[in-house]
Image (cartoon, rainbow, N blue to C red; front, top):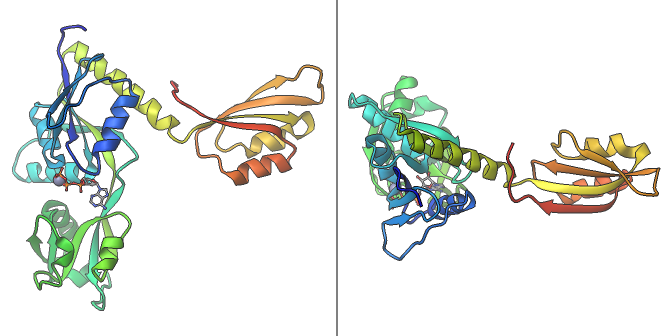
Length: 299
Ligand code: ATP
Ligand code: ZN
């Protein structure tokens, strides 16, 4: 193992983003050991270590340079960017990749029976949230004055407690809102988990490793849904069959020994392949259909 500079990547210690983040790093080839209660996992085959922290600490650690990379929700990243900006500080973080997991939205919700006819319904009312900067920004942009009630958790019970008239909270399925007799009215921010870096240059070796990791992550994200399809097609139906292959650009077409009327078609499909698609291919004349998962891909 080389003794050059090491890269520290901040990952949520325990929560919704932990498993996905660690799995992604593992798929990028990182081998590390993780002992219980250990806060740093040392990479064994790359100069990359994982720092396990609260998700809210990740943008700050990256901005200050304690971590060179981090994985966090865009909601936390944007909230802290606004907070730093308004405090006159520079937020030295840059989003390198959207990771397509941890999807949720920061949304406004109203108690059942309370009318909401658009942002102006918030005028002069109280809104509970743990995202005062994102909410404040949204209210300002819409020229609405409302009182922001900052809470650190259990936002959804604020109306019942008489602490607020509306709430602004993270929603994914909406079941928590429904259970608390709230209805979602408007989205303020669409969020997902992202890879962050400090936007100041590092040593060339570190920069090269970061580039390499980003390329690998990109590859992992591309193949997540991808499938490799193999089938036999009558030459006469080749056009119809390749048109049915989901999202595939240029399939490989090969002759079949002793069958001048048929060809073999192989294609990488960058999206999920459903039974309906296979049935449509079969109806168009395809036989010997085989769908395989794709493990790695480099463009
Ligand atoms: P920590 O102890 O690390 O501060 P936490 O309670 O803030 O944990 P989690 O509930 O694990 O964090 O959420 C982490 C991130 O997961 C959120 O910031 C958000 O980006 C994402 N997320 C996805 N769906 C949801 C959801 N339904 N509710 C809350 N967060 C969600
Ligand atoms: Zn948190």
